[in-house]
Image (cartoon, rainbow, N blue to C red; front, side, top):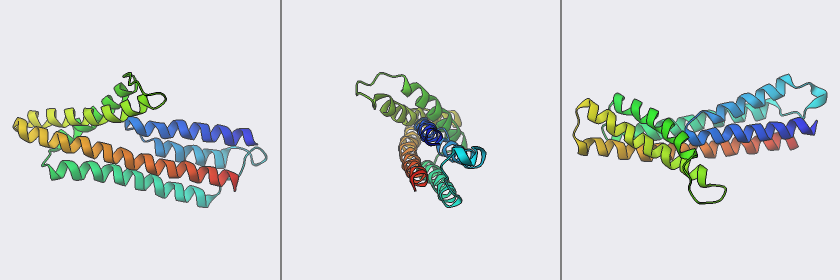
Length: 176
C-alpha cells in the first residue's frame, strides 16, 4: 500500500523535473495522480481524492498560464513576430535538453541550472534568428531575443512553482 504511494511520489518528482527543459511536466504529474487514483486497486493504494486532483488541475492550468503569459508578454512588448516566437520555443526546448549535459560545477543542481539557463539562451537565439529571418535589424532582433530569454525564465519559474505546489498537494493527499 505504501509502496505504491512512494512510487507515485518518485514518478511525480521525475515528471515535475521535465518542466526544467520546457516539457509539460505538471500535466504528467496530474495524469500520474489520476491514473493512481483510478487504476490502482483500492486495497493497494492510499486514497488521493477528487478535491486534491481538482486543485492539482487548477495549479497545472495556472502554471501553463504563467508560462504562456510571461513568454507572450515579453515577446509582444518587444515587438516580436510569430516566426520569432516559434523559433524561440524550439530554441528553448533544444537549449533545455543541451543544458542538462553541460557540466556546471555545482553539486546536485548544476544540471538543473544548466537546463534552465540554456533554455533561456535557446529562446534568445531562436527569437533573434526568427526576427533576422523576418527582415528585422540586429538591434530589433536582439531586443526581442532579450525579452524571449527573460520570458522563458519567468515562465519556467512559474511552472516550477506550480509543480511544487502540486507535489505538495499530492503528498498531503497521500498522508491525510
